[in-house]
Length: 172
Image 1: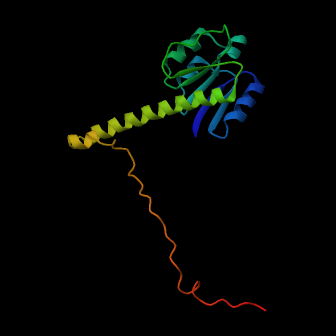
Image 2: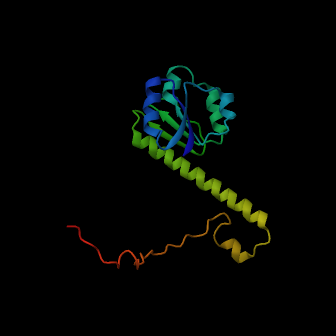
Image 3: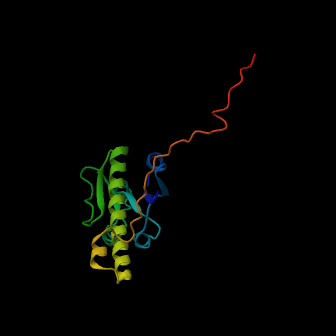
């Protein structure tokens, strides 16, 4: 489960997004966000920003767009036709309005998968650098953080000598 911050000024759309995502993610809902607060995000894995609604309510200023360029958190940008273009940056997906749950979930899933993969790769590089003494053959293998494979074993039920082989008595 990822921590997702949803910035949506309309209460009804907050509820719709919440119903769509609460089973898979932990949500925090806000009606607006300041540029400074955006740069100080800590425990947020993803940001969903309804840029169209924020612009309509004059809550999407140039300072907020500029802050979005520098923040490391992946962003889902909800946009309508002819609306403000999203900032140029990595880890940003645009979802066009009217909002469809599948499109939103797909965008969130792709951003979280990419962010998780990048995080795991960074951890693997750090672990490899920390080991330092590993041979070249070991470094070319699986990443140091990879879990040991789980071996699957067939479980065969053994016959019970006492319960199954005992004669059954029929009741009259």
